Structures are given as structure tokens and as C-alpha cells.
Length: 213
Image (tube, rainbow, N blue to C red; front, side, top):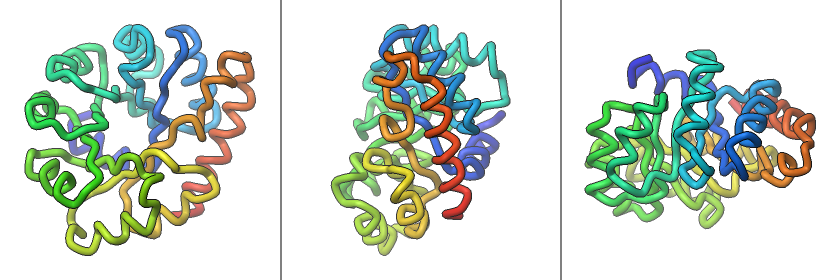
């Protein structure tokens, strides 16, 4: 998929699972559990051990049946490394110009973190496709609504503070998608081998996302 197609798919799904896996093996099993529950947007963070190898494994296993990306990019070289590993989108929690320029230059769908109006506008001007409002929990849906006043044309995705109980509130503000981490896929459940519970959480999340839209 090209960048435009990936963006449309992210919008269609409306949900990205942000995974900070405890180990490569458990991370793959976490993704298997999420996919079984209907979550098809997967972001493997660089804080996951051997993250690039995990993405290669998942890319080989699922191909284009999921939208697979890498997150928590903090170094410019990670943009090309993520692309080589098989990522179709890349995400950073920050908007550091040198890093963001390397992400945009990769040609992949790019999401960079911002919080203040100045940061949001800076990220957009640098060529970021979707602004990751992070941490979303700090301002909540009301803050997104406020940002949408001056920036109705800038695509936004909150991450942090998104739960099955408040998904509808986020979508009412006009976000293109939401990112969910431990609320959707708790690493502790993976450590305890409770993958069926992760699948149940995933199915519930997908249900509420569809209903909210």
C-alpha cells in the first residue's frame, strides 16, 4: 500500500493498538490475540525488545491483512530502519524537526506527537500526515475540540487516555483515529499468558469504535 492507501485504511479502522511488548515472543502473541479480536491496526513501539525483528515477523505472517507500523521513534535513522523492517507507518511521541524530517522523507505515513497549538501547527508544517495528540489524557476530548477550532483541517489522533468507555467522546471531536495502549492490550495479561482476555478486550474495543462512528 502507498501512503495515501495506508492513511485511508487507518481512517477506516479508526483504531491503532500501541504495543510495548515485554519480549519479542510475547509481543507476537499479543498481536495474534488482538487480530483474533478484530484489531487490525498494529503499532510496535521501539521500546519493545528487538522491535524491528518483531515487525519483520509480523509483516511476513500477516502481509497486507493488517496495517503494521512502528512507534516511539526518537532517532532519525529509525525511520528508514522501520521501513526496511516492513512498517507501513511510523509514529513518534515528539515533534523534533530533524527526526520528523527524516520520517517524512521515508515516504511512509508519518505521525508525530504534539500537544500545544504551536506544536500541532509546527508538526503539520513539517509534513506530518496525522498529528498524534499526546498524552491525550492531559486534556481529554474537550482539548481536541478546542484544537479543532483553529485547525479543523489538521488530522489528529489522540493516544494516551483512550479507553472503551470514552471512545465515543473522542470521535465526536472529529479525530481520524485513536491510539490505545495498555487499555487495549495490557502487557501484564501477556506475561500471565491470558491471551484470550486480550482478544476479548480487542473485540469490545472494535465494537465500541464501530458504534461511535
